[in-house]
Image 1 (cartoon, rainbow, N blue to C red):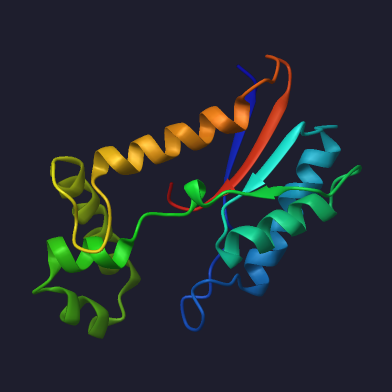
Image 2: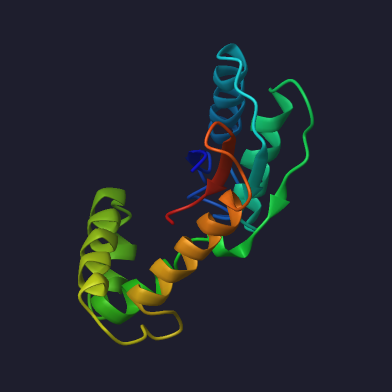
Length: 161
C-alpha cells in the first residue's frame, strides 16, 4: 500500500462563508506545502474533496511544491453533514448552542453527536449512516491507492472525513 497523507483543509471562515478558508487557513496550507517541499516529497496522486475549502487548501499546498500541480476531486472525501448530525442528536439544544457563540460548546456538541452517530444503525435525517460514511471513505481511499506501489505517495485533502 502506498504512503497516504491525509490533510484536513486550512482554517475555515467560521464568521462568514464556512466553505472557504481564512487568511490563516491559506498560510497554513502554504506552510504545509513548503514543509512537504523541504522534505523532498513528491506525490504520485493528489486528490481533494469537492468542497471549496478543500480545493483551495489543495491548490495552495500544490503551489508550494515543485512539479505538477494537477489534482483530482472526489466527493467521497467531503465531510459528513454535521448540521444534520447536530439537528438529529442535539435538536433541542442546538438553538442555545448556536446562540451562545461558544466554539468549544459547539465542537463538544459535534463530538457528542458523532459518538451517538457511531452507535446508531439508521440513517441520520438528511444524511447517511455511520456505516455508509465509513464505506464511502474506505472506497475513496481504495480508489486513491489503486494500482500504486508501496513506495508511492498519495495526498488527500479532506475535511472531517
